[in-house]
Length: 216
Image (tube, rainbow, N blue to C red; front, side, top):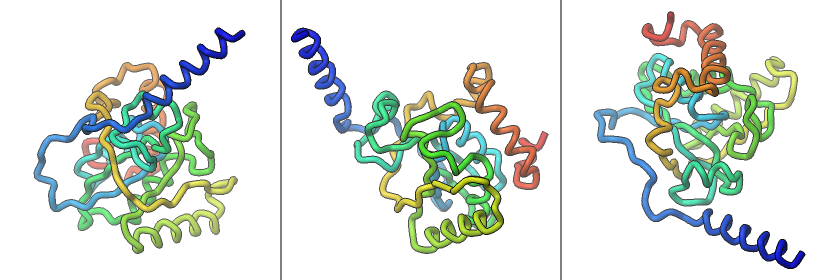
């Protein structure tokens, strides 16, 4: 029994050690010509699917997968998977606000996931899969609140919306292999059975928002 207790304590110490800050970024995107674009940040479940959904939308020029909302610096996918970093799988959207407004991004966000499930999205469960709308200023905060109020007034969802409205602090890019994962790994079992059906539901519901290359 004493041996078992010591083993548990040892494993706990190892686990805690793995949740330390990392000195350097896990990955950073290459330099691009998108410096004049606006940025928006959301979390709504597995970022493989969420990234692909927003990349299909007109006015969106790039989407990156990453982590936000927690306390750990430069977290890894493994650390996020423990559910103890405070971070959620999130995305960074680079968009032209002359082609698409923040309100439409909210429409895509709330229209492509279930914002009534707490710490859960589809088959994925844990704090890292919670629904979050990150605001960067008071205008975005008001737009988010007003949009949620509109959804609730019109009873779009049968259950209470549990999406967190959180001030944006920092976005940590996920490992390179997570970027464009759905497009590069179409035969991955998760992508085939979870991501693609979710993307297709969105495309069927909002065909008017799709880029021409995604409309078929």
